[in-house]
Length: 537
Picture 1: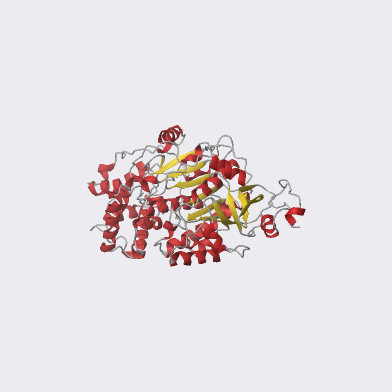
Picture 2: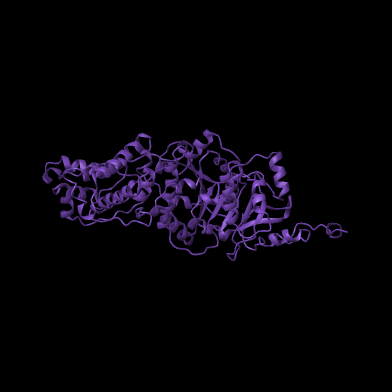
């Protein structure tokens, strides 16, 4: 007589993994997910072709700041996995950031639609499915497309990230760093692209070409490449992404009035053909959070979980300095309460030093149609702990909405590898109507703060005014300035050094500008590990 005939079927267990009806191997796997504290429910264990709903696969909430990877071939369900995790984080009061490249994540703000497929999936995994929408804010880079505009100033974006966007080589990247250093020390604020172009042009002019000689100099050829790259970048309509009011990344840490975490959705369909741009902007958001947030250590739950979609675009053709900065940021941001999930097709898309820091893994199906696919499959299998499954066979046979999972337990140890049938998201699995999206953006309290671009006086205007001035006596009237409506930076009054100012234009003209503008002339900006400026909020 078989075990199944002699052993009565148990009701749903009090703790996941305790059902005696489970096969021995499945019971051992399920016991690795029997967490006692708060956790996210991913789905039910798959074993020997069967779904075992009494064996639930989960992620401990405190471990979400240990970073993760969601990988898999196109069409295997990665986006729905992001939606599922984001919903549960929001429900437990954790803010979430999602990059919406294809335009189908906006549905997280609306209740889902019950249908036969959803009901069947919920029954399979013992999910009590309820149609639910979640609090969401919608953003768009530079206001291109639907969403509240997200802008950054050139100064705060920094030379490393800008070099990545402009696709500069290592020598050009280093020269751009010198240009930023010069602008920082002289109080020439680089707000938008025309400011940077003005400084580069000045440094190659007769009056400015000697300025950088003492620290390496700027060759005419390199300056020409940078200027041409800026011109081409602007010609593609990218100028709107740089400017003011600059987006305050603390907005991403908000919770709704009912205590649920805000889901920040960055709408990217309008720029999906500019992968260097949006992947680098995502890194700027993360880097800005990194150097602004205080240390919190291991908290009961993350302050924010950040999903970095199409992650391979960030690493393609990246300089060593850029990769080192990514690695350091990912390693250190955990202690500030931020979890980062990289989303891509295979683990080999992520550098080994970064991959080693991703303790939570959700691997959807992989294809093995070509020799390169086979190689990628074998490499993926090697990144998992030892498993009771034949992972090469399993990873090519998973269906849509199924994945291989391993996470960090409450004690920080890897859980057993578990093939999992994932739960269905409770929000709408698709985009909301454009009219509803626009209405949500207009109703946001952030719309008035960020919608209207502000072009205040900065490096471009200062250099032009200085060159056109006949003398300091003619500059006594206060310079006109368009004040930003965003008051979050507390700019300090710094002492003007006349010798510094005279080095720029050969006169004392900037003294009156400094007095009228209250700018930071003579104070070098402190930059972070990523070269981004440390802002004073």
